[in-house]
Length: 172
Length: 172
DNA sequence: ATGAATGCAAAGGTTTTGCACCCCC
DNA sequence: GGGGGTGCAAAACCTTTGCATTCAT
Image 1 (cartoon, rainbow over the protein chains, first blue to last red):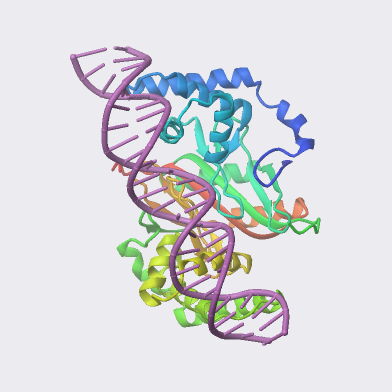
Image 2: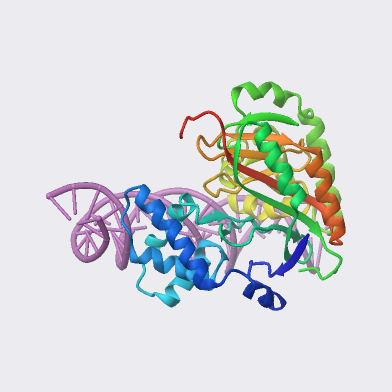
């Protein structure tokens, strides 16, 4: 079981930055998800688009775990000329293509997106101090595949969030 | 492992209505969550409020599983004079008090609330036909308690959603 | 040439906030 | 009396949509 810490809004806490660099190298990751997207685009007879690549790039370099408005902000810093409507029109495409998935909501109901190709992890959030930790447990991973199979479903994805209180009593 | 079906928006499918009547009797449930809320209110030195009781009542009788705007609509049908700001101001209180919890998001990212005191269940949603099934699995329930304990967290709650495709190939 | 993708601005919907008033303790 | 709690209206915020234009194939 592994564990590492994120700040409430999903940004990595300072001590996790090292862990972040352990993630797939950004260039490699970007290339992989670009391929995935291209494949989806081809299959659906859509057109390739430069803006979508800018969005992918921004996600990989700035916000692997984000809410739509956050990504919009990052995107505008990198590419001020991209319209927000375009981002909002593309998010569902990225989800459909499997590049993105919805991540956990924080304790205030905000929906996050995250890269599917990034390391898989689940989340445990502290209801007192609102810190978000990541963990990964093979037993649960395995069990839910059995469950889905038992219900005649083909498991595609899942989200597991534990709400709890941690031992550090720093409220808010 | 139990399973029953909800419509995409979380409303019970017709054949589940029977199951719904198996739930805790509404009056009893309302009383219980009212007590829970009262306790929270006392502990936090808040004031009791008639409007909050109206909200609880509406939740129990109209919408045990809802998005904020849905609840607002129900509330206004029962109590047209309650301001929407009041509802939005009270939702976080109800979550903090433990009466409500965030439910699963549907595949379009909408956040739902649900009664904590209602039967516990997790959700499996079909990414093709968007049906939502409920299930409950003791092994996973137990395992995540161990996990939380192992991380020195005190487990309060959790959410587990499986995204999958079901065997019925009825897209949309 | 055709359908997809885009930017802009406007619209739509949801949630929050300021303020005056009221109510609970 | 003081600090919640409330309703109203306005504001803020997020997301979607219409439309004219540009782009990819």
